[in-house]
Image 1 (cartoon, rainbow, N blue to C red):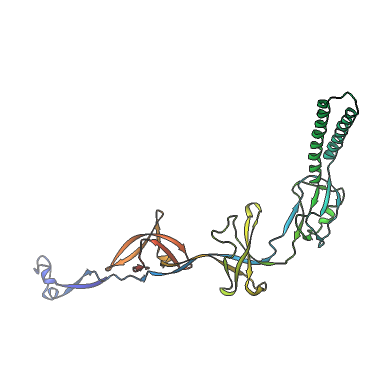
Image 2: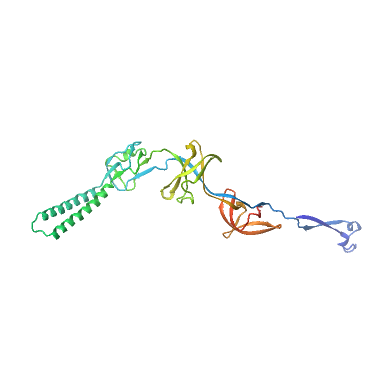
Length: 336
């Protein structure tokens, strides 16, 4: 605001009578200044909305690792009967790493074998009898099938007591685990056995910190790799791996770098994945958008007047946001 001052003569404000005010001729000639407000021009900082291109991107931490690591755990409880694991040894998928014995399941199989043998013996006896009817023989045959099905079920359970490699690669055992799995030691259901590292070595992996996949990021999605805000490589997504780990479950996006570049010597790698790009859209600075009761607004300068304008937003970039509706791209947007 600008100020101007109005000068008022004291002679006009007081009665110069010696009896009432004591005003003298000298006092009557003094002046006072009274400030009066005068409104000046209001200025705004503005930027023009523009028509341009914007991309939906995600930036994740990047690291070199083997995302194909497989953790082998026991699905049963019992005692170690045999163990054929050695740290660093190569195995093929399906190889038996450990066998576990269970007195309970062994007893059930032994008893079921007696029942199966009895059913078979009964059938053989009936089959050798001259006056046996076909119905009786068929019934005995069904008894064998019933007992055999039960034996197959028990054998399948017994097979789960053989801990097998679920992938091909090299075995990694935590220090001291060789003694943990010595013959006769107890193993619990869900207990960690070992880790298998498939061949292929470490690759550049960009991991999420949640169990939700990134929207519109697929095989072939472009990736830009930076270190300390400087681009050091680029490539595409070649694999997407979900890592189940309870509350820490996440996705790994494996990056196939151009020219097979090796960026493992960099620290603090960042991988920016470009989900998709939109062209010829209205863009405004992100910090110019305000949200009130879940509604988005921008302030537009029209003929020197600030007008609050409702907008619908789309892609949010580093510094700009797409305006889906509400603006044409020719407006002056107030930023400050």
